[in-house]
Length: 137
Image (cartoon, rainbow, N blue to C red; front, side):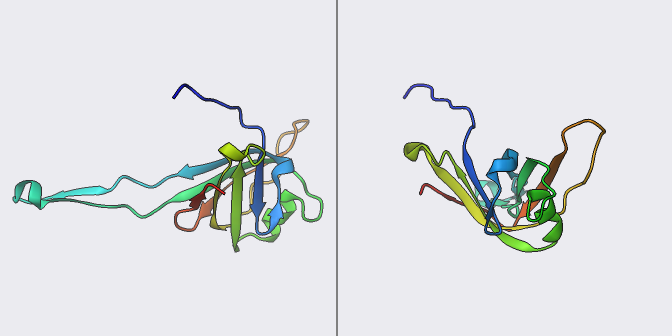
């Protein structure tokens, strides 16, 4: 199989039942899970085992700020601290390459405001509860 590449251009981003991809400039599922811990005994290979780490995933996001009612900035502040569902669909316009991640995440209000005469950006990293479900719809 030869090399294959594609620039990120289209995705669907649903957080808490609302789609926000139109304001989104970065969406990244992060796997922050530590490596498992190895343990050894004097039993040679039979006495070696690895204890897996707990899952630690996050959804790292950046949006052009939108403070209108139910815009992404307003929505994140309004729902701060809530656990909601999410779904990210990658390449929804290319059926052979469409994949998705879904689950629940903890909403965290982002920082607000910024530098003068700079386009305002809302950035936040939302903790995913457990491991997200990966699917090929």
